[in-house]
Length: 475
Image 1 (cartoon, rainbow, N blue to C red):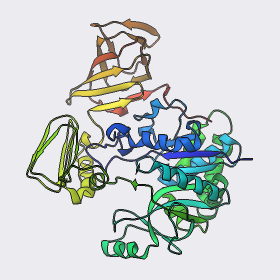
Image 2 (image 1 turned 45 degrees about the vertical axis):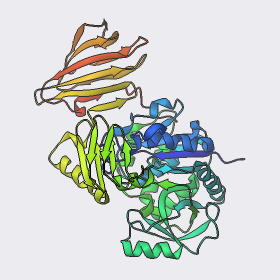
Image 3 (image 1 turned 90 degrees about the vertical axis):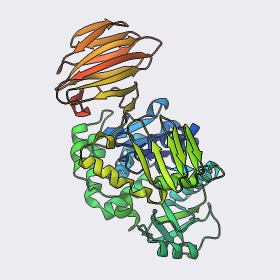
Image 4 (image 1 turned 135 degrees about the vertical axis):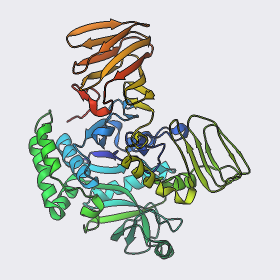
């Protein structure tokens, strides 16, 4: 019997490395990359020819469960972690979930959701080779052939210099944390060290045996989830949440890969980058004759080796060199392009002083449409809400704030408590606090609402969702 293959896409993240474009509520994987769509969309499309869209599972957290990009993939499965616990619990959870789903021992291809891969054909060849090796009980990782002594990546050391790329399968000697420049240069010269891509292929039974061997406490909780929380077609969330909360917060590298004797790597040349900073973003994207990468409405004079990114407004640069200049509607970043990894320090400072710019953009996409914050003051907040045709905002209520809605385009069907109300264009309705409501756009054009919130607290924590209709966790 042919082994069933699943793709598991890890789609968490905190949105620190590409700030101000990425935010806590919009991490890197949901950023649009030119005309090719977001990193996440590209990842789904890249693995689908190997496993089929119905065999793609996205593992994410509650913050990003309704992120931009899920809605366009009709058969995509989304599994929500009860809390962020790093990659080992996420991968373990996906293994027991897919084992229960398939009622067999599937092969799992684990992929981060935020990478660029320029040579998709070569990527497919490597994954197919890794699947064959995984059928024989190996845990296979993709080791990226380095082209420079990078200090921003972890490395994999193999037992000998490979005779070929994309086909050789070599035993892993050890995983190595991000080295200094001198050490990275030595690695590059030996030909036996490769960048750790974070992509893995294995059988569900094999990885679970390694969980049992190296982190038995986590293994026990995973089998409790398998036997109890996933016992029927309906997930027992109380059991799932309890068991998951007791699992260690640890990466798959530390937990298993650095210790297992079953780990092999395929040295791969697939045009890979994890775009972990604006520096790497500049490195991998096409440049003009002056080595500038330009996005959006940008004009430059006598400037070179810059990343110039305009999201909303005209960005003009004169006589500047080696800079990252990133413009959004509510923030502008200017930094030395070689210090762009330090942007996380800005995010940490914003979080410490409780600035909302670390958390979200003014415009937030949702499966049903989007909203844009127009005014945000201590005593009131104003939003423009757009609900797409035939979409609904799930049933909810607000604990402490009142909503005043003015319909400026379209016609809204609103369930307010036990009442059904039709609100037409140029009319308004008030939504009291602590009263459940649901809004539907029944028409063929966008429903646009100007919302005024009044009260003392307007953050997402004021919302209590009663019917998460967009949450597609499936067994």
